[in-house]
Length: 138
Image 1 (tube, rainbow, N blue to C red):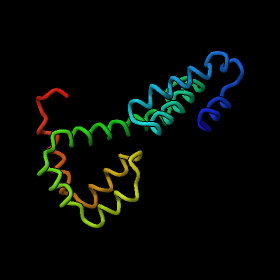
Image 2: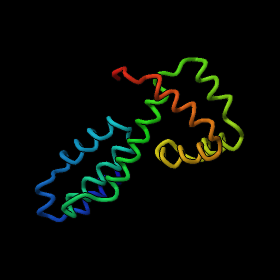
Image 3: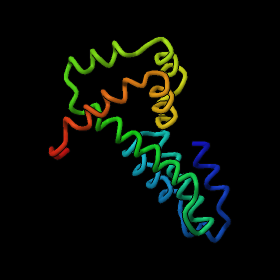
């Protein structure tokens, strides 16, 4: 709720008349169905900043990258079978598990690069997952 209050305070009176609190809340709700609550709030903040500044902003571009990374990971795992998940778990060394514990899911790009850097063989497994679904519509 504090994010919404901060967004509301960023708007001056004419802008408050244009964007009613319910409209802003509907933006948050719509965006949160895509990537979760945190992503939705980041999206709402980005939209508010974009409205105030009259164009695109860094927050929305960063959010788009994060959602793209989420999609890539989901797509790679979508066609996995039990043996693929077993292989994935077997490839997780101590350093990789440490990264998974230290970085939250809302920073998927950072997490992905840390995991790949610590266990490069996971790239092949991910590529295999991406290619297994080639030609199928999801």
